[in-house]
Image 1: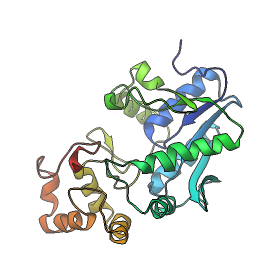
Image 2: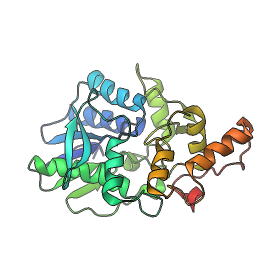
Image 3: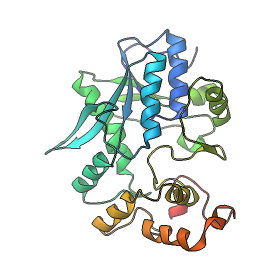
Length: 270
């Protein structure tokens, strides 16, 4: 069976706004002649995505003629999901800040509550509001992302990873988008989308975060959050310290492989 064929019943398509999840949605649209009413493509905005990501989500929806549900986390007495659009989407980390204020803490590699609350549970809350009780969830995990295979069971969702099943790698995704008339306007460096997902995420490598600080010096949101809560996202350094290190050392650190940790997934922060 085609791994992109939708099962019976309700289906959530987790659309991150990156090239891989867009590739997956393209294949789902092809395999099912579009999306039935029982399938919803959902994008959850944390307020820390780059404008290029938001523009890509909007353009993908327009070019492919498919509705993408934009959601954000809110907290008013209780956490809830609200629907937004490109024009009303948060741009300065407001959902992320609200979550940290509620938890009185910053997430880190050992307490990754940001993804769970801002993305997974926000989408789940909205779908439950639509009357969904159980559903299948398609996620854009590739075959070359071995550490992300075999996800933990969820209370309402049966999770499928069609790209992993189809053997799709980042090279396949990059080649696909290179052949399309539009693309995510973020560069691919050493096989990775620079600036993808949340800006300066603590699960990105030290080298990637440093490059984002260099290329976007006016984004001091992580520095401000660390000052406010008196803790850091990383156990290795604060964003201010890393910023000072970059300013002192100059660009040579980006050309020397062992000057900065290159590993993703939080390994750099232990």
